[in-house]
Length: 149
Image: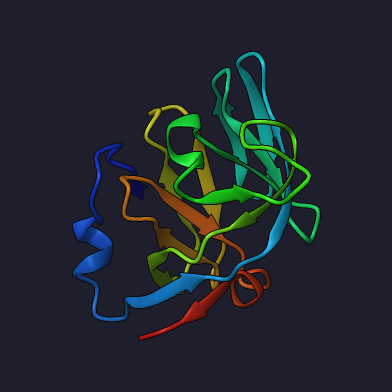
């Protein structure tokens, strides 16, 4: 089991792993809405708790995920005519992550201490460098990330 720390920086559990890779998020457009109230988001890997103001994103395969309001602006920018902070189309910014392809099922506890994700063998454990960890399905990873080292 892996736990998000909630504090900036990469996880030693990922960074010190000999099979860790560096990757860069590909620029992709996604649909975004901002939740006005606390809610849950059903992701392919599990139920995630969102706070009011958090962004709920929908990817090219129809998958949903949450990005906290505190981290959204550093990861996505509005695509005109959408304006920042409004629902609409956004593009992901090419930020760097550390990633580890897992060879067995695994779990990740998010920084809220409540949300728990479950990954399968061949899914990727992704460390975003901001104190959060995530799971990206094996089929989605190569369309979303470019391995750079």
